[in-house]
Length: 318
Image (cartoon, rainbow, N blue to C red):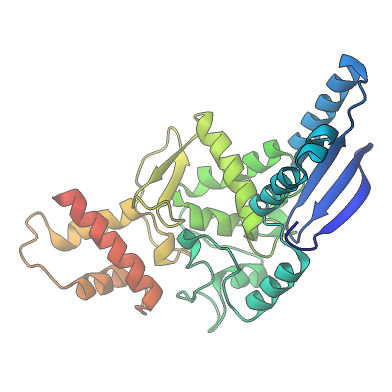
């Protein structure tokens, strides 16, 4: 491997013993080493049933056959490293650097470009200098848009790192049903607020939530629309399959980045009117949108986001 990983041999889980477990701060990977000795179809089916049970409990498993390992050791290791990267598991040195960077307020190494705003400064709704997520944890209550909804540790949302996918999907459905349509950015924030064991949504946690959401979308339970066309957390809007596509409401505890673009488009329709003859400047429109939702500061983060909103809006009206 490219560096030293935290690896534990012979880990017992739910009465089973895993050959190797590679550990990261947010997730774990099981590596099963299959010998070449033939144990018959019954043993093979037992192994597969065990794997399915562990996968339902949230484990990711990589199987490495003895013959494959000795034929191409590098390829076998590459498969394990790729699985580690997908789960956000990094070598010990890189992991420590990432923790240091997060402590200094920098984005973690390897973060997706579409999530670049996640740790940037936003309009605060609580105490000065207090982020909204921290305010939720401090007060124990999230006061969202109508209908009033509370998301705190008492909500008891399961930790996606060790919970069954069924329970994770049930918690996600509750949020989408109560708050939808909502952006994926806001959905993840509410899930963290309602999970007693989560304090932030790291890459591994987001990956597991995305996996659950994809399963719900594939089953036709929810609809996900990429309203800005860039697959960002601000662009992806989720709702139940039978719910209205747009619901206009006060900002509540949502930042402007957490309001669905389609909802902002409705406000822009009223601000500009049918003819759009007045042609106000972009900044004037940005400030009008902020004023509508009772925000005051036009930060650089908000300005960049509203520029994307305005560009998408104008494409729709062409």
